[in-house]
Amino acid sequence: MIKFGTDGWRGIIARDFTFANLEKVSLGLAAYLQEKYRNGAVVVGYDCRFLSDRFAETVAEILLKSGFDVYLPEKFVPTPYVAFAIKKLNAIGGVMLTASHNPPEYNGFKFIPDYAGPALPDVTDRLEQLINSEAKPAKREPGRKLTLNLEDKYILHLINLTGLNPGQGLIVIDPMYGAGQGYLEKILGDFGYNLYTLRNYRDPLFGDGMPEPKKKELQPLVEEIKRRGADLGLALDGDADRFGVVEGERLFTANEILALTYHYLLESGRGGDVARTVPTTHLLDKMARANGYEVIETPVGFKYIGKAIREGAVLGGEESGGLSIAGHVPEKDGILADLLAVKIREYFKKPLSQVLEDIYDRYGRVYSRRDDYKTTPEQKEEILKRMSSLKLTEIAGEKVVRVSRIDGVKWELQRGGFVLVRASGTEPVFRIYGEAETSAKLDSLLNEMKILLLGTVRTVL
Ligand SMILES: O=P(O)(O)OC[C@H]1O[C@H](O)[C@H](O)[C@@H](O)[C@@H]1O
Image: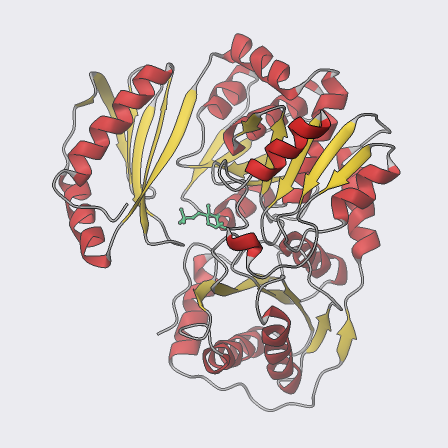
């Protein structure tokens, strides 16, 4: 049984993610595309993972035989570049072979429809139906196999969109052995920055780690910044749709980068409504309301954020590391987010940490955190049951003013904070998210929820 999670179908290579299963999935996709289009082109990209290029060939062959033209790159490419190519080529969709930031033993299949952002559930539900009923596409006159070569156009688009100007200073770049290699170097090098790049070659084992721009995995970048006295560090995840920004030893969270980007858009006359997922910081809400704009709250998944951007939001993002802005594809783009960090420093003429202090001075300080807990499927069921039966009027002494069930359960608190609990759709974990106006309050909120929820359930981690 093939299931599409938060972001496509993912599985362990050779156990679930096999050539046989991928053929089934590709036949289902071809049948789906035949239902919707008579003909057209599909972009098929792949990351640096084990066998990703071969998996891409398999998908391409089936689509070609089903009568569609296929654009294939000559080497690995970032996910946002595939989305950009779909838009630029007026393609009917795209496939990206990637398991994003998952551990090395995973691979994945992500379908991006013609709107150039992650597929929404109406699309993935139909796809799942066709795949699991082993639907076969009709044989058609084979399509043409074409080379995807739009890097320069993508780079130019990012330069125009961010409005970068020539600058100075030393930036350390960390593509984490992933598919974003080369892009930031090309752009920032041309704008006069001094650059040093680490983990800049393909390693399907990701140096025995995970290509996820989080604290533990970004330690080599932090050390390199210190060693070289660099001004800034910019990282990308395995398929470059997520980002990591480091100044000195300070690693910015995605919530902080979203607030910085929104501040920049508001101050530079590009304000508008903002879209965020349920667990993402409410600092964005305060900023929007103070400036007369609306907030669109969605379930977790950039697919929903992409939709909101298509419908007019100027910025959309997720605490998990997704960001895009109006004028770009409605897909998260780590390269864009990293370039915006450079642009924000240039625009305000100060370090990001100082710009963030200005934001807190104006809108109020917030502390946010997410704690992940590994569970077995049985434990997950038990926690889910417990979660839906909790009837809380207060958490850690804070009055609950609203309970929402957009995704998991979210308890909104009197002084603007919140606690949210949900099961991940990409990993075997439970996530407890919280936000409060002091760090001590945040700790007590998360601790209390942990005890309430996990109580006697023995977690693996
Ligand atoms: O919390 P999860 O369901 O594991 O999802 C975490 C993240 O996974 C993927 O990266 C998706 O593209 C994101 O949209 C999502 O936020």
